[in-house]
Image (spheres, rainbow, N blue to C red):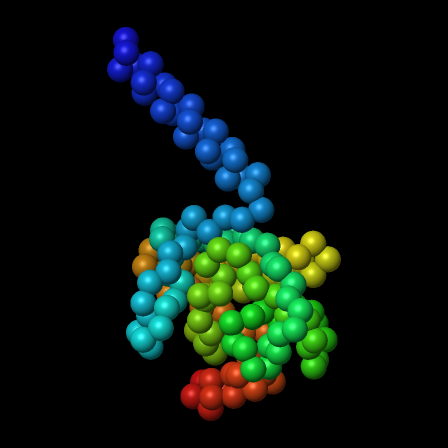
Length: 151
C-alpha cells in the first residue's frame, strides 16, 4: 500500500509540474545547449520535433544602451531597418545558430507588443539535430558581415 501511495503521489507531482509548464511563459524543454561544430555553442533538439510544432517559447527583455549592430548576442526587436530596438531572449534562444534559408529547420515568431517569442519547427527534426534559423537581421548588421561572406 505504501508503494502504491508513493507512486500515486509521484504521478500527481508530475501532473502538477506539467500543468505549470503549460502555463509558463518560458519553455525550452525540447532543447539543450552543447558545443557545436564551429567551436562555440549551439541549440540542439532534445527529442524528435514534428514540423509546425513549437520548439521553444519565451520572453524577451528589451534592452537600452546596446548597439545590436556590433553585439551579435541580442535580438532585433522590431521590423524597422535600421533597427533601434534590441532584446535578449530567455531560455536557449540565444544559442540557435544561423544558416541559409535552405538549411534552416526553425523560424522565430516575435510578438513585439507582448515581448514574447515562439520558435517553430519548419520541418521534422530528429533528436540531436542542431536547431538553426535565418537571423532576421543577418543581411544588414555589422556583426554578421563575415557570416554573409561564408553563407
